[in-house]
Image 1 (spheres, rainbow, N blue to C red):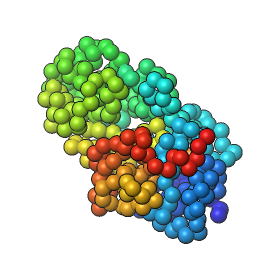
Image 2 (tube, one colour; image 1 turned 30 degrees about the vertical axis):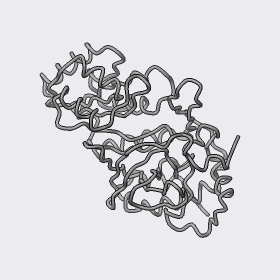
Image 3 (cartoon, rainbow, N blue to C red; image 1 turned 45 degrees about the vertical axis):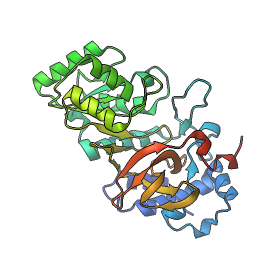
Length: 330
């Protein structure tokens, strides 16, 4: 097939990307089958009749764990940046080789604008110690980009300096400046235990993850504690991962809406090739921005997808439960 990558990327930025999502997804599938050797091999091992793939439900979704064991990138492309996941001691991290980092720059900005408006309307505060203490975090890269675009002298990252963060928030409240506190769950809880706030002009956004720092909590309990401590009516959430270049956002209660370059489907837990547009099961993600890696990923998350495309996460597979990875052993 003839594939015009410049036209494809222009469509991702257009207002009609949502309407054209299905067509763009099929373009991405055929392009990646031809150009991405890892994905091509995976499809062939599954015995996929590529000519019979006409709808998103027909597309083979690749286990996200392949980013731990394979270099998932299209032929003839070099990586401009490599994003890596956090991992426990002895575990192999995921590595996402990004051939065109400008696509990520445009995608995360487009997603932020879709749900929150211009970054320059906010002061951006990043409380991401577990991510800042290592290299290769796509989340840190995104938040750093938003901090720069906010063009606010009080925007910035906070490691363990909670007193400085408290003072900054107090100054923002005094001037009625809108702000967003983006934090990993355990760090937000640490901060909430030290300070009680009344954040009338702020948004609290958790990005998940206790990272072994604290006892795991269900979302409702976590959000209840944070709402009480920060004096906010709801806790926002961001859904993303190292292997994705697009994000989904929740304004509360863990109900996520995808940005225009992303769509979530569900697969049956006992049949990974049986994919549905709505229902309960394991989460599959279509990420149109992943054009040079893989746009069709099986995640380890379990959840529910409604008919209107909203979704929630209810849990995760144990590593032993992930199916499909044994097809391609290094």
